[in-house]
Amino acid sequence: MSIYDYKATLENGESYKLDKYKGKIMVIVNTATKCGFAPQFEELEKIYKQFKDSGLVVLGFPSNQFKQELDSSQAAAEACRTTYGVTFLMHEINDVNGKGELPLFSYLKDNAPGAIGKSIKWNFTKFLVKQDGEVAKRYAPKTDPEKNDSRYRRTITIAKVKRRFRQEYRGRFFNSMILLIKIN
Image 1 (cartoon, rainbow, N blue to C red):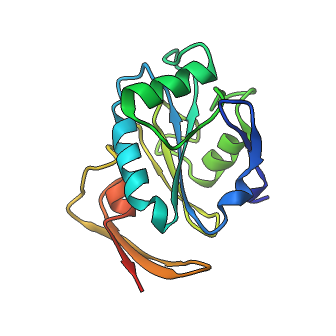
Image 2: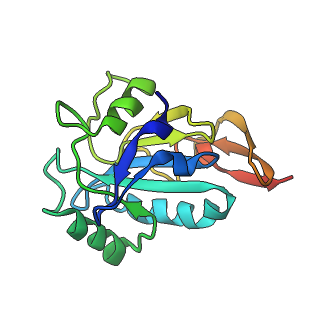
């Protein structure tokens, strides 16, 4: 099974398959609007706006498993829009651990376990999925989307259907994912 076989449900109840993102870079984040890491919404939005035309999508998946989310998916999504200016897709509130966890998160955790096991320890755990559907990296909640690491991590060459571009990145999260995008 690949990531493209999984379904997701938006905050408005509309379901879709992740295969609509084939060929795109996905950043999948478990979120909570009342979490101390919630200011990361602004950073996620900034990166989404900056790179969406180059094939990056950010997908927010609220969870109340850590008791830091509003009561409804619609209220959580609205809070993200009004408080943090979020325009990327927000989904229904789901569990990210345990018997009732969203199957997508089972897949993500199996393919990118954390430093201390598979379970998600807190809100704002982030998963980077490459264009081919491979789960490339898991980032801890405290990893700030815009902070740089001083060392060079690696280079990913990205093939796109309509155009190709190469992406070089440094750091832990988005700067480790996207520092430069060069259109060939």
